[in-house]
Amino acid sequence: MVKSNAFERHAAEYEEWFDDYPCVYESELEALKLLLPEGGAGLEVGMGTGRFALPLGIEFGVEPAKAMAVRARAKNLQIVRAVGEALPFANGRFNKVLFVTSVCFLDSVDRAFKEAFRVVRTEGAILVGFIDNNSFLGGKYEKQKRDSLFYQEANFYSVQEILGSLKKAGFRDFKVVETIFRPLAEITAREPIKEGYGEGAFVVVRAIK
Image (cartoon, rainbow, N blue to C red; front, side, top):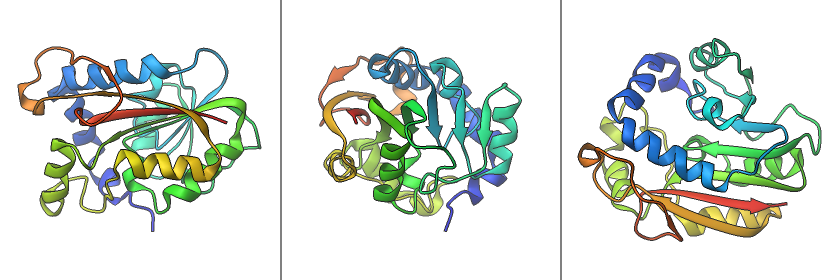
């Protein structure tokens, strides 16, 4: 089952979140930029409205929610309505594949990472940005899922679970950074970025094919 119903109904609210928490958004964006390889074609799985793809220079994306895809196309991004578990692209098509807060909405993380492995070229990279289920924010989101606008159907993962799925898919040479160390409402400046995980709520994992 594709977990995109909330994003079909609430695309405007999704966009508003980034405007309400600009320093959180900037912190997450900088963490992704730190590990993103330069050059080559990039694909974002779960592109949404293009909030991350556009500033990161990712031109291609897949997104199951039509309301989100319409907004991404308006930003001149090339987006296809599809899911991460069945990417409509040839083997080795991309230099990098990006997931940003989308893994929690996948039906199968293992299948999606195997598809990412297929469509990325040899020595290409996968980047996964997500909320660590073991962090203070992950725990809060898990407890409040029932009342959340977007996370009712979400499955949150720990860093170890994401690393395990990436290894199972065939990826290697892992690099991990973290950011977002305080409650979102308290963040009024860009958060620091640290290597490793275990303190920050937003974690970025890069791995190589």
